[in-house]
Length: 260
Image (cartoon, rainbow, N blue to C red; front, top):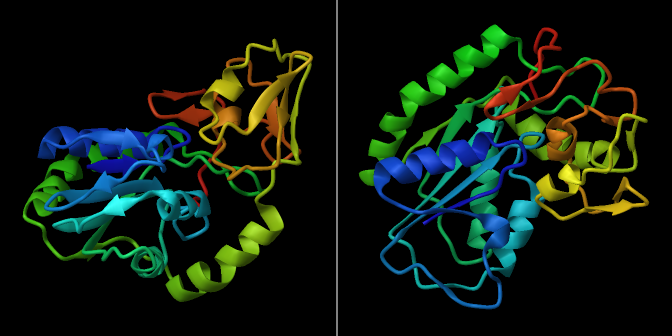
């Protein structure tokens, strides 16, 4: 069983590709029922998600704590997607899993096209960089799938220059200072189509008089911004002119990449 969380499709793509290769099933983590037991005995359990500020998104950890797992998986692994590096994400996530009785056996990282552009200096990948990243992912997927099938105990991620600092110090500060939905707003080009609400994995958006309204439970996955067909959603002034990306689609407005 592979459970995935994805805002803009990078992690969903990786989860579905791995599931197809190893002969497993992939399903959205947030759609996993919390009221019914989820049996794990003898099966492999994979968690696929993006890295937010050098750690697994808090929403992933929170939902896993609510799932009623029963039994012990034969193998438990994390696959994280990121724009550049993951810091000490595997070690921090392993501690989180231990609190719910699970042991992390392996962790893999895939560098994917950037989606987080909410701060000055943070931009999407150039078209060339996007293509290079996706080509590298497609080439590496079969290798990672074989390692999963062999139940290898391995940590294969790009940590970055100061992994402890980014995961254990920068991450909590980043959540405290920057993770919010209060800066989202829409321009007059908004048609009230509701696509942003449909794409929000947390169901944090509703339409109020034909305009999106955010309700304070946001993880800044940026699905609403990147999927808006009119490009009407902005996050303060930081996203203006930066273009859009979700897996399988990118706008032509791009500037040179800085990864997060």
